[in-house]
Length: 135
Image (cartoon, rainbow, N blue to C red):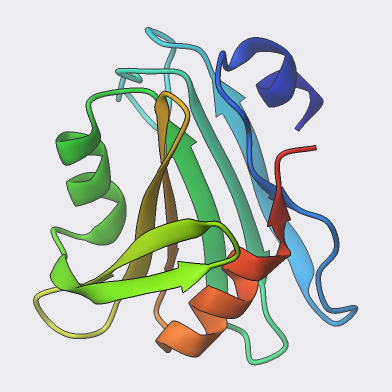
């Protein structure tokens, strides 16, 4: 997280705290042009922080300043809009994958797009959104 906040060029989201039974499983940051996963080259400065919840659900916040349409499609499994929800001072677009399995919340934070994604209900995602901070 320190690298992301130092180099991203946008306000990086991370939770202040999470429930004690959640386990962090992934934290990674790459600069634009660096390898993201496998042979995929990142189209922007990209950050991901993931947790396994007490129900063994993977939940992550992904953030990038790459073109948002392609980034959102990749992270959400080509989800479509499913309404809006406001958490704290941000309005998030609710999204659902074509098979109904994956849900996401998407918003703009500065020059970046932030995506919370999980194979879980919207209430879990909105609760997680409420845990996020930029400091």
